[in-house]
View (cartoon, rainbow, N blue to C red):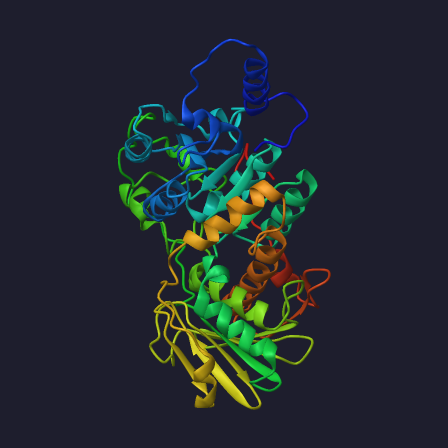
Amino acid sequence: MRHVTKICRRRFLGTSIGALSALAVPSLIPGKALGLNGFVAPSERIVMGGLGIGPRGRTDLAAFLKNPDVQFVAVADAQAARREAVKQMVDRHHQNSDCKTYRNMFDLLLRDDIDAVLIATGDRWHTMASIYAAKAGKDIYCEKPCSMTIAESRALAETIRRYGRVYQAGTQRRNIGNFIFAINLVYSGKLGKLHTVHANTLDPRTTHEWLPAEPEPPKDECDWDLWLGPCPWRPFNQRYVNGGWRGHFDFHGGGILEWGSHTVDLCQWANKADNTAPIEFEPQGNHVHATYANGVKLIMRDTGWLGLGTCSVRFEGDEGWIETGDSGQVAVYPESLRSEMPVFTMAGTDPSTHIRDFLNCVKSRAMPAANADVAAQSHIACHAAYIAWQLGRKLRFDPVKEEFIGDDEANRMRSRALREPWHI
């Protein structure tokens, strides 16, 4: 599926098979090489690699491997145990031992045979790994949050556009039935004029404290310098690499970004605001209230939900409302709207349909549902809300210039310094 001018492996295979058929020589060609008997021909397969695949990444990987047009061939990870776990998973699926492992992602990105990558590192690496992958000519499915700052959000979107890559953020609820139903109900006008959208977020707090220093493991077991990547240096502690990096400011954008990358994203979609962000952000305890230029209110909150599952959203119009979450259950008013509602069985955490959307777009070169432009705008809204919460004051924001109005301190927080030699 590579879209380049040079002759690649698939094109070579296609011309070779054509040449064979032109010869009047009996040949035995396996059905799977020709796309027969339920197999996908090599020329139609999407060859993939993975960067930093841990627990959530393996859920994504399992969904990718269910698609017969995916061939997974390599994984790169700073931790040996995670590399080997993915290799075993892939080799077992493909019934071979061909999955290659790399400590450094650049060794994987240099491979010309890889069309696309699954990026499921910690948050600190998402933007940078995606940018490097795009420059290497790979299409990208990247877990969320996709960026650590407003500046990273914009750099990611601009790089994807410049290099013409297909990018799908792992905000899979854009392809989950109950959330789509809620959006379409807003668009239908049956709730009346939209006036408030609610996004389920988590406690915004993070810490600047370091965990106690522990002996650094051998580099091949865990490359600590590579694991840290662009983040400020700190001593090794096993809890970080076991998933305990969450909640630490250098590695994590806090609870607004953690879930808001999903739920604020859905609120942006409901408000037809995929190309903008709110113009005002006001912290209220652990909540942040924001306002769009069209007057619609965005409320980011971690309490007061109906219990319909994680990552809930609520959309309110002047004639009705709808609330839904990861359980697939839906609450709606007026109740008469329930007669139009199908039964939803897919959990909001299931990436299967979202991944299929990405694979289809890799082939068609269309824009996927959670493309880089869409992801950048929803993440910018989350970052701006987190900055307002950290500063404890109302902020005005210019979504065109992507800067705060009349607040130098807030504007300095739109980016973070990157540790050498890493840069965007």
